[in-house]
Length: 506
Image 1 (cartoon, rainbow, N blue to C red):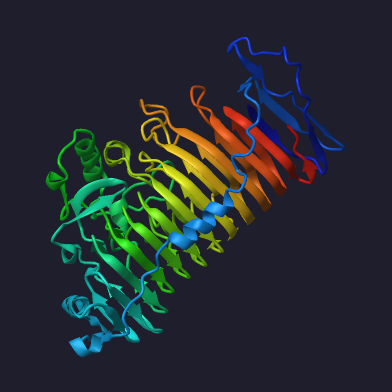
Image 2 (tube, rainbow, N blue to C red):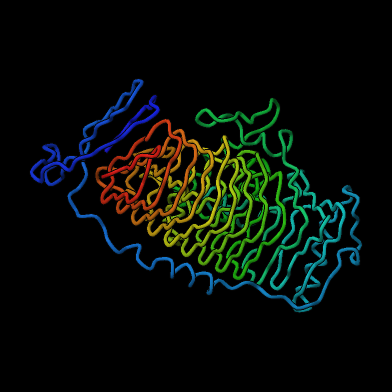
């Protein structure tokens, strides 16, 4: 089904009538032709383009969303939030200098080691400006930033050596250490009212992104290297099965490090802090279990400044956060292509609530590094709005990425201003160029209010793999330029859905 409506009317109406049961698509035996459409208005001019398309004859799904939200409460209950002994290890006692110039990397390492060795507690960062290279957390350590504390991370790439085992855009490699990193640790936290400042800008880190991608911002700067060659080579290594230990992509590769990346950790808490000026993704837990991100402000407008990207994780709660970013606010991932399929670890059991999204490519997004699949995602009580917010709810994949995405539940969402409200894109980046057909099913959206959208839908599956069971209930789109596209959707339903004040019926 495809609908392209260009509205120039003060009042308009869409009506649809169910065709006779015998009205089948001759091109696709067994599929009924999609519902007929008409457009009427009181004044002005309007055009409607409806391309011949089909929907399968299976009856509308019923019951898949019933009692689904009880699962969200179970996820909250079973997501372990780490607790720490009452011992405090003040950074100043280890010789830290808060002048913003002295390198405190060794001081942080010493304080964390002492805290860990004593059975755990809080490493306190008092008010002041602390320059540091990478910080590596250990089990039972809470890195706590007091109000007024600011950790300024070095922009010297050599500071992030030696290379560590990490993921970059869903691919495993030996690369620069993330700015804050932990591998295989249990009970770790970053808390407090202070600020983590990556100091990235157009003269540090960001130019490595290189030229514009699909008409986006050109981040290249004359004389600065870019990531392009290394990114292409890493993709080749991944597809050819080169062992990760031999994928050496640190100094000279120009692959910007993630800001915070706990890897294969359990019981992770990030709470209260502000994260800004990130080289790359801001919060990127990988292969973790029990992750809580609470009351964090993610403010970074550089290239690939995703706010929070849980990747191949289980039991994640994201709540009360602010996202004002240069890329997706929240992007749920599970590994890219061959690496994602090799590890075969979905991201599952995610609850997102009471968050605010401002600028970004998408508000709540699934993909695009999605080859391991995603299931059981719940989003509620969130607000999204910005003239620079490209999409509200988005799923992005293709037949190179593949993956099974299922059980995505959204309710009580307010979107102020957005380019496109609901996007499910099977043609992201490479398009239909692979042999790993994605599956997307069971999406339930309820109580969504969108005040101003240039387009309501950009939804298109494949003929061989239609989007299954997309349900909208009590959703209202006030100001709309274009309804957009709904194509290759099996079992779509709309109950009490209005577009520009008029009921949208199917």
